[in-house]
Length: 345
Image (cartoon, rainbow, N blue to C red; front, top):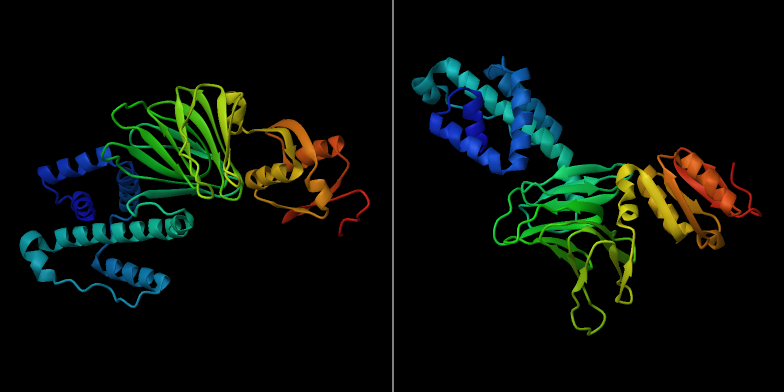
């Protein structure tokens, strides 16, 4: 693929090679996105010559701490076929792809290493704390990713299924395809659908998985490890939720408000009888700031509230009016104590 893009950018690609590139890009969303980036980079650096090619490679190698010197190319091999001018264009395109490709690699390697294990050919995406965004898969399925969420998916769905791996919270709007069920792998369960919309909450540092349905039907399959229970398949219809407490392998099905379950997409936070510790986890993910309890008693307080696009300061102000506690917000963290404990200066 890199060779084809190099030939396309340098103007050396045949009509057949151009068709091959277009065919690949039409079915591979990841390749298409990277190609657009590389093409943009090429247009900004089209005047590169062989000297700048070697110089750029040397600089990049030093940045990456490679021991490899700039590549030595036999000029006459290419010059006989295309001439020095064409060779320079080909080499310029090659180094642009090298620089742009390694730039992408540098910015994604750490993120990919943090995501849970999945097949090597899968694409990895990770939202840090405080960031939410949406992605669209090659089949048209749209996924909204909450803060502190990791997902892995293939560039192209092959075989008889569409499979992804999730750690965190996401809302899925799956394009219907009866011949290719959509499967979401979780650390402690699996969700299977044909075409529907639903919310999944499955953070690896929480003791519960929640799946609620907005439209269509969803099958949730819990993962049992501690007991010899027969494998369950829980089928859910709209405005129903399954809660799986995997510490004691308990499955609970109950009615829910699916609009409320996915309200986080619109910047809304809803707390229904949650402990202060559970609320603090959500606030940490949404605002990217550590919350420290100086009293264990306070962390067990239960509170109910709803907030729409409020700041962290506003949320704590209103929470403190419903329960008696003191708090201090600094650049690095939020400190919470009971009324009898003095907060540090």
